[in-house]
Amino acid sequence: MLTITDLHGQTIEITDLQLALLQADDYRHYRRLDAAYEEEDEQLQVYWEDVYQKLTALRGREERGHTGEEPNQTEKQQRNNGKT
Image 1 (cartoon, helix red, strand yellow):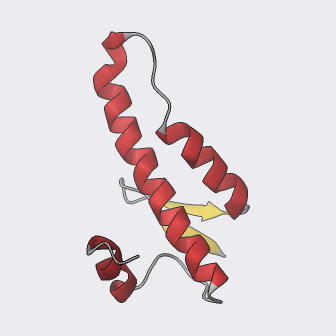
Image 2 (image 1 turned 135 degrees about the vertical axis):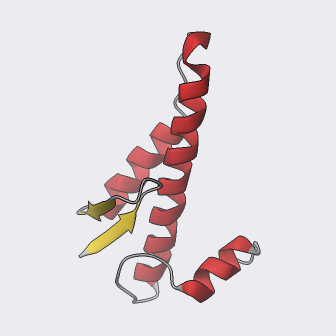
């Protein structure tokens, strides 16, 4: 079973990784035209960017033959250092 943990600490089960990546990619670019929603849209962009990055890492792990929840500590450190 593939899962990620979102910014709110909720576990999300991924049943179709490719579709999840497409959806997260769309949502992270979504903005409403009404400026009244600008702050909420920024928060949603941060959320969906985080989900997209976690899904991308999960896809990389799958391609290398790994399974599980999220990147291990070494992969997280490499990502944070810009090496991934």
